[in-house]
Length: 210
Image 1 (tube, rainbow, N blue to C red):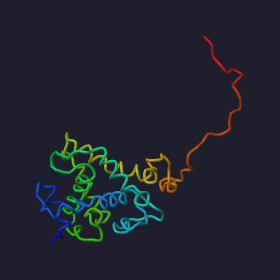
Image 2 (image 1 turned 90 degrees about the vertical axis):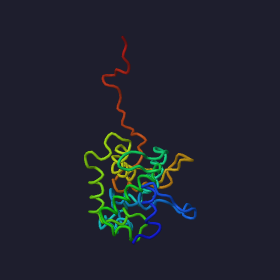
Image 3 (image 1 turned 180 degrees about the vertical axis):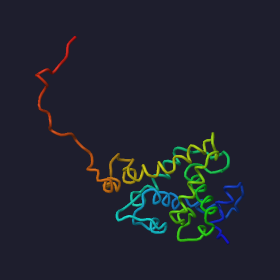
Image 4 (image 1 turned 30 degrees about the vertical axis):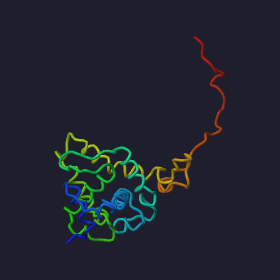
């Protein structure tokens, strides 16, 4: 049987109502779902990667701060409730993304509702996460709706932000607060200021006239 917190995304996703005392709960578990997605695309040595059974010897998407970055992007890009077959969710942005991932995760493995993380998707094994996306990418599912568009962004965007500087970029100062994990795992050498390689003009021609 599902615990109260685990059952709430089902109520929200299918138009159910919540008692007033439940409205204060963080629903659905967005942060864990986004972290589970980041670990799926760029595994690391964090607890989310360990849980899925696919890790790496270096930091990955979770350590890169991809989870919070994904939440920010989806909340900014989809500030309105997601409506469209087969998911008519009265949830905007990252909450809708998390709800869909968690709902399909429970379909794939009902046992994922129980685990160390609040999000069912984050509790899945790596192969279970693969199956979630196989189902979400089936032809005909939400074709021609806004839902299809943002479903397609999930893996691409998660990988992109994992290798970007989004996790350490301070929007208030427009500066990086640390060396991005993505730079380290991709062996990126950092910002180039140019090189003193100028050797002169070819044949002394430094301008062109009509």
